[in-house]
Image 1 (cartoon, one colour):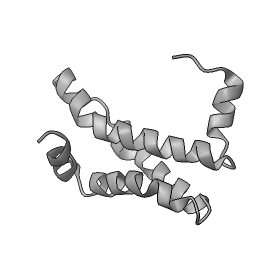
Image 2 (cartoon, helix red, strand yellow):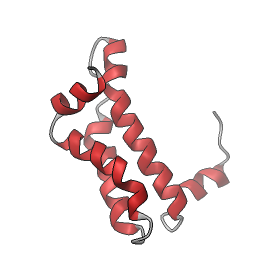
Image 3 (cartoon, helix red, strand yellow):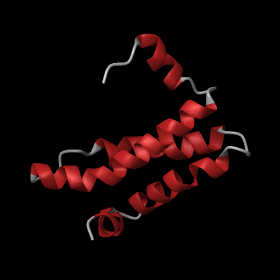
Length: 95
């Protein structure tokens, strides 16, 4: 998929609530896909989802208005399971 520079800048704009919510959901999906991706590669090579990107969800939650917070509950739950360690999250995904 290709995205123009202007569209990418708009997507990253922290004042754009809709885009921030999309990013939070994208990060949650990447966290969920991590164990599956690692299994396909036969080793854990996708570490950025556990270390760096997971903090984005909480930061986005803190920055969105109160009316929008309900739209980020699912990514926050995924983030919480991820913080507990890979075993709880993997047991949901790979069972």
